Image 1 (cartoon, rainbow, N blue to C red):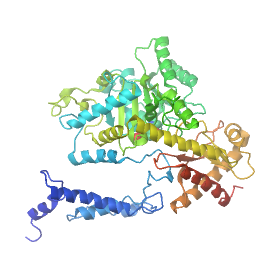
Image 2: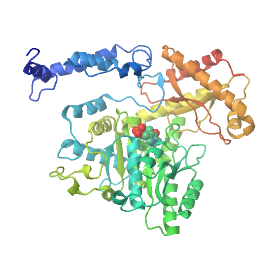
Image 3: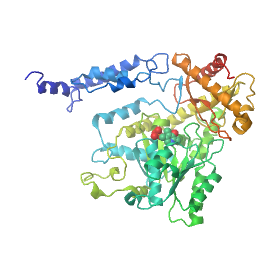
Image 4: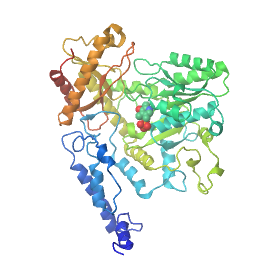
Length: 549
Ligand SMILES: *Cc1c(COP(=O)(O)O)cnc(C)c1O
């Protein structure tokens, strides 16, 4: 027989693992391997707000990929992995104002990394030890933050904000259709959420067997919050049709515009429905706060004294958000993303319930899982959808809560809102730009740019409400698309700020989409100069882009 004898290969392979027994030489090698990877990533940084240069994925090439025959090296593989980061936006770059993606802090990255080395599994504390306790600690910290009683609440980390909605609606199904876990959903149910709520409502309804058609999308006010009168009417209509109300979902911070629903009003509607119709179940109220939760740090901020010294416009925005976010504790369950407004790496999503006994509705019975849960005390695996659950999200969240505390989160969010307000002030100061969400209390700014000769004092309102303005609206939609592509091209060449565009900020009263440019400020490194730069870029783009027609 020729070739390599397997023991030789085994020795080689063993060196590619962290050593099970303390070996500082090998630790140095391990750390150095990470350091070298970081060095290679660093070499991809330039003036551009992306790593390396912008690339189009080549799926033809990807299809040619095959598993190699031979054993490779740590260095070779990590080099190949680093190359895969080419083209990624640098979310922390002050010229990256694209979307609700926050750059992760160093401790939260370490928090994600450490469990990858030791592979805890949150399915049970038999397999996760201190990490199970860490999860319980984060649950308590965040419960207290939003106003749940940590002695009564509970929660688990799951696979994204979508997962938190899935859990919330699943609880609602079990309440509206007791025993559905065992026997399925016997009749028509309805899920009520606003038109501006996240589209994962459809996934959730589809995957849980309710069906997408059971989702009722309730119209919103101009501030993107749900219209309570329409919500109540929709709920009444559903009941009149003999459907059971599976969940009322309050969106506490919409993805595009930080619209915040009146949760207290939603809960009051739920209570009225129960009373008026003598319902034999209490429709579940879930708060999709994956974005808005972080504003809870202002629940006990003394705005009058304003010790952190925010500008008056910022104070007004923060206080306005608090008015609604402070009601989060009224929801039966809440979804929270640390990877959205908590500066943690993907995935770090927490599902909280106010009353931990609700989770009993999801328990599948211990006898079905005989090989798990023989010892230990905390066994989320008996009610989680997942079996294996990673702990990276837990430690990343814990890291940032410990690192930043309330003061740090207030500082970061306050600064980001301050920068967004600064941008709105500047855009409002020019006669060729209109801010669509000037009442917005978050860090996202949606605006439109107009060619010369358009009266920007009145155009946005006319375009939104007057069907006779349809052609004008569509022409200006096209103009804004062109402005966006111009800005995008320039930013990718290292000249200016990378923003995004939404094809439908909202619909006009006559059913057409309103295109808007979007700046989402989430980098702690953004300063006034970057904001002013964006305004300059936009004005310069107007000189370059042909108006339509
Ligand atoms: C992003 C988002 C979601 C989905 O969360 P993922 O973490 O992306 O799964 C749900 N709801 C709202 C309001 C969101 O912004």
